[in-house]
Image (cartoon, rainbow, N blue to C red; front, side, top):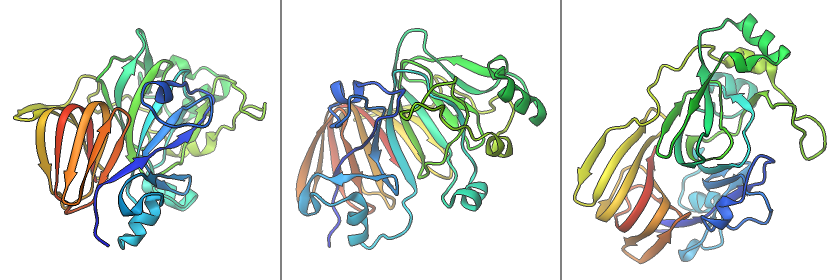
Length: 310
């Protein structure tokens, strides 16, 4: 079966801290009032996309990959996250610990601030180094706020969240997240909130103590990333690690893709066409397109795109 670009329908999650911007502004179909996350490129046990175009229309993304002979574990997961309220303070494990204890990869991720309220902030690592004993004491005594690193954010900011980094998305922030294909999260603090069952959401203190790097951030963050000018627009480098490479493209023109690795295009704004040998995808704000490896396409239009490769 010949490979072709896939327009994907997102998986949605209705976590209690979410809002409705993904539905009202990005056109993401969601059956619940809250649409906290849209899993825009997903092939995971907790959710896989549905194909919206071509001969594979109606099949799951996982089925499509299998029909194309790709039965390996998919490497990345891409989300849009609408934090109407703040998320829990959390941490993710590295690969070795995660495979041993959770049966899936660890979770290194990056955030691109798509939009945010004035005065919005998030937690990124610690203000100063603390030892494990102090970390545990502050968790149990609810004084962690005194040592975490609060960062004011603005639209376009970038944060690289290596596995082991303590973090929390703050209230009023909309984020594009590119991550390893893992759903393992260790919750350190949740401000005493109750879940849908009326009970406090579980914390994972012992595992968090095992994996958290209790130090300030070492990777530059905020308005970072080299910008280059091209005939088709501007390209900003957002992340380049062993798990994924991510760029933000301000498109005003056209460029070709024929990559030995698959490419994900997440449309944040504007109108974008993806032309390939057998057809054309017309995409807009909130659309996600998977381009298989060695598939020649022409991308054109005017808009804002998150371009990700493994």
